[in-house]
Image 1 (cartoon, helix red, strand yellow):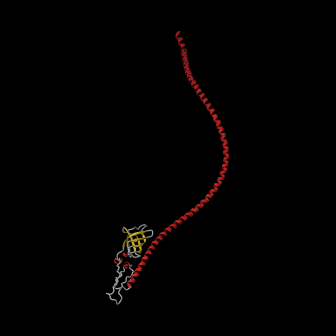
Image 2 (image 1 turned 180 degrees about the vertical axis):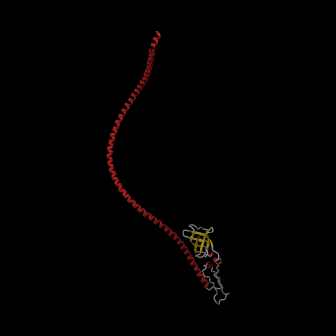
Image 3 (image 1 turned 90 degrees about the horizontal axis):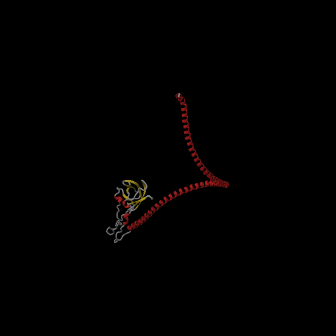
Length: 312
């Protein structure tokens, strides 16, 4: 009888045990949840304390901001007053700017007119400068030409004086040769005739008809044999001893004694090549001056260049 009763009570015991276990689990969960809530409560309290401190700080900052706002309002009012004053001043300045703009436009027009005048005057100045430069160049050319003409005139004067002296000497020599000489007088030498030109006549003075040869003696002037007559078939060769490119003339170290005559044409050579030509215009016994008639390039003549007579 006891066994069936125990079997009948077993489900109740199991239910009771299960209930106890469930209650224990629920209690454990509740305790765990309670602990969590306590911790959260402590955290919240700490947050409340922190927020309270922040609130106090914000209140202080708000008070400061309020003071700053009042200061800014006062500054704003002052700026508004200044703006009103600046606006009035701006109106005055605008009026002044309008007057200045009108003045500027007038000055701009005047400046444009002056620029046109300056351009015209500059053009006239440039033209006058060009004319002055041209006149100066012409003046320099005329001065060089005048200098060359003066030099040539000086040479002509010297030639004229020498020819005059030569003519006087020839007249004196001719008069002396034609006058009767005493028997005891020495012969009259006419040494100046040794430098006579080829065209100068050389006359032999003979005794008068009927006079005996032993009783009167007259010495004839020396017969001059010129180099150009002795070596007529050979061209005259010499050297330049002076070059004047500005006046276009040269001086040759050969003269009348070497056979040079006015009008002779000479080739000017250097290193075997012809660099120009010159024509003799003044002749001295040992020198000759010539005009440059042709040149290969400016400055192509030098002292020491070879000069050779051109074949006629």
